[in-house]
Amino acid sequence: MSDTTLIIGVTGGIASGKSTVARAFAAHDIPWVDADDVAREVVEPGEPALAGIAARFGTKVLQADGRLDRRALREIVFADEAERRWLESVTHPRIRERLLERLAEFRESPAPYALLVSPLLFESGQHTLVDRVLVVDVPEALQIERTAARDGVDDAQARAIVAAQMPRDTRLARADDVLDNATDEAGLAARVAELDRHYRRLSGLPPAR
Image 1 (cartoon, helix red, strand yellow):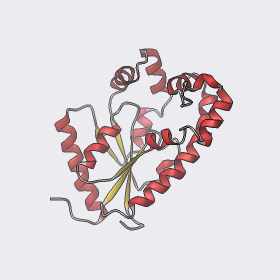
Image 2: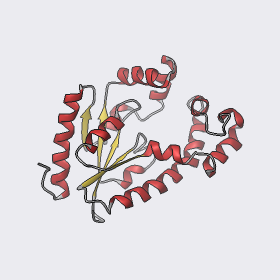
Image 3: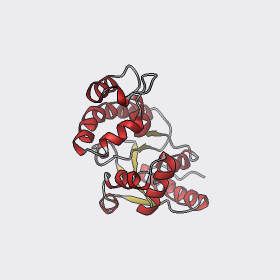
Image 4: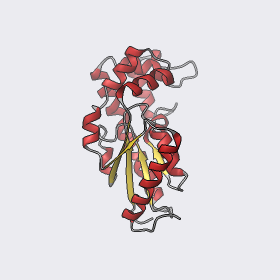
């Protein structure tokens, strides 16, 4: 890959299936980095961000082994926008720095394009790191249902998490491409294959056979 490698930003609301979509692209030999994975890295024990979080919120946001208690922290920051913004000010710059490192590594790959998967692509300013934006979209009711089931939270907290994110209409208005993920596995695979052909053309390389 060259310095002009096409980077596709993949975003969507919580529980829209962004990682599932990324794995579907991986079946076409497309590399990807997930900002959520990087976000977990920067709050591992020994990381400056975790020390800052513990200093602000105390041991109530730490597990017995010293790791971050994500559920406890989530309950705090989703109930208080000021605290959520503080947390973002601590973590987002560190996440961005590591994402830049990963994207630089992709330039050594023979793949025609790469993905940056991020739920906060726009909110964090990470959209400036990509050439196009693919929004993975599902109805809000499905987001709430999936979030409650996946994270073990009640309906009210799931709704609060969804409400704290960028509105669905705003996100869709900023998309270059949209993938409707309220579909079955076959439908998702077909749409990803279509987008793969599209992105390969945009990269200047022929579609995969």
